[in-house]
Amino acid sequence: MNIAFVSQPFDRLNPGLQNSIGMWTYEVGRRLAGKSKVTVYVGGIPGHEQLRGGKGMEYRSMSLEPDQRLVRLLERKGWTLGKNRPAFSSPFYYLFYALRVAADIAIHDFDIIHVYNFTQFISIIRSINPRPNVVLNMRCGWLSQLDRQIVEPRLSGVDMIMGVSEHVTRGISDRFPGLAPICHTVNNGAHAVQTSRREVGQDVLFVGRVSPEKGVHVLLEAFAYLADRFPGTKLKVVGRKRQLPMGMLVGISDEPGVSGLSRFYTGGSLDEYQKYLEGRTTELGLEDRVTFTGFLPHSDVLDLYTRSYLLVNPSLSESFGRSLIEAMMAGIPVVASDAGGMGEIVRDGESGFLVEAGDSKGLASAMALLLGDRELGKRMGEAGRRVAKESYGWDLIAAKVYELYRNL
Image (cartoon, rainbow, N blue to C red):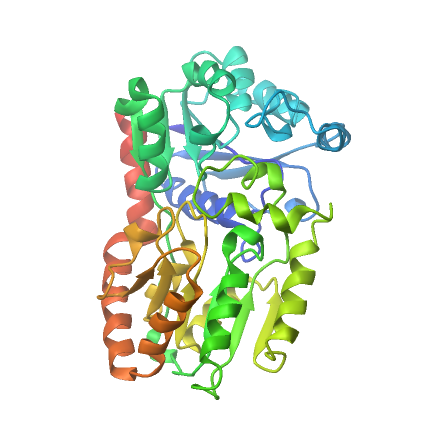
């Protein structure tokens, strides 16, 4: 089997530095390479020249000129023909990247072309490559959110759709019932963590992009309720300080509580949320109790799991919730909001607690139960690790992908 992964042009694929999609591509791709030839198309951005393919796996870097200028123009002009037609849904968004990928695919004998999120790439790739099967992997809710007249014609070129969670897959099937038979759920995976190295501390941990939809402001409010009761506990916020552009989620989402996040976009700056969090931390008197680490290599994040007591994901919108399964692999109890796919991961009252999205007091109550009862935390951590090992190991995820490919 000859497989081509078409990365989003801005994805990071270097081991240890990947974003979620980059990690999925790397972990699944290198496992499939034992049975198939795997080619990964990436955008020509700094760092990709360091990539090395293993046996049966090759990276091909495509130039992003003149795409970057065109994308800036689209975003500056606010290309839109309505509420759910943002710039990134335009057929011109990274058009030249898609054309270069399509042309390179045409000179190889691929059986599977695996595309992430961007439906406009499918039309271009399919027009030049009519024979291979095309798989669309949706890691977000765009097929449920974008204007139907834009995305529906593009889906005619798809042979299979993978959703990262049942939440995402169900949203696609409900909106496009005719596509339900070709929709499948394939989750994120997580690395096994050596729990023998675990040093049970008191830190509360958040891992993810520091952006409004991730709910870090809700977590700060919740932590403030607990500060006096648990004076030795500190909060570590780990992740890139990168506010997601409004049009990519807040501007197109119909999820409760998400539209209100537009208040963090009034200044026209993508660091507005970071400034708000810094100011709020000071107002709450938490300067010495909260640390914003910024981006850390994945190996450092895995080490932090072994030295923390509790992982919290307070997201208001979440397609899956990768930090939850990583924490569970490390034997850490988790507290999460019930947004998106996270309710599929956390077994409420068994491996952790689920609370209503945006409810800072509910979040604080759940955290207090675990911080005040180490035996409960230990039991939930052990239960979560069993669930993670049974359902989210990378070998399991890759095996499911391979079987779905074979069925095509």
